[in-house]
Amino acid sequence: MNKPEAVYQEGTRPRKFLACAVWNYATESVQLWEITQSSLINSLDDITRDPDYGHPNRYDLKISRTGEGLETQYRLIPHPANMSEEVEAAMQNPGVNLEALLNGEDPFS
Image 1: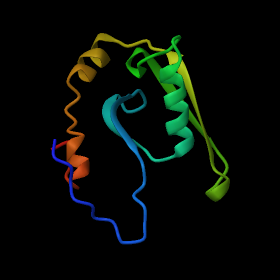
Image 2: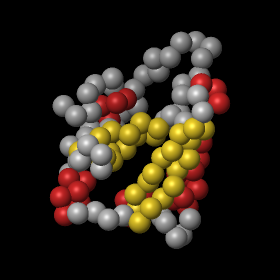
Image 3: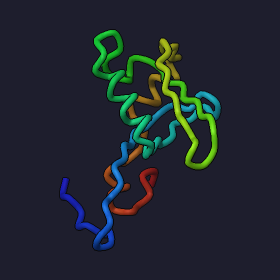
């Protein structure tokens, strides 16, 4: 993969984010989860380093949000996965091109 050229303005810092394909049980579909909140990124990092959990494809994640504006807080809670065959099949080939995000393209095209 080629690293794209920087397109941010001088004097600003690019924001760190994570992106991954996830199964949304509410919509029963594969979606793209872009995580920009440092509290969620740090929580996910902590959970994946815990030997009781490991890689996040082995459990579900529940996210809660409280507050508004600068007072917004997020919580990430791992739950045992209960994947049906349909969900497992969809996640084997989610049809998401994460590299497209780096080029400003549609990751689902």
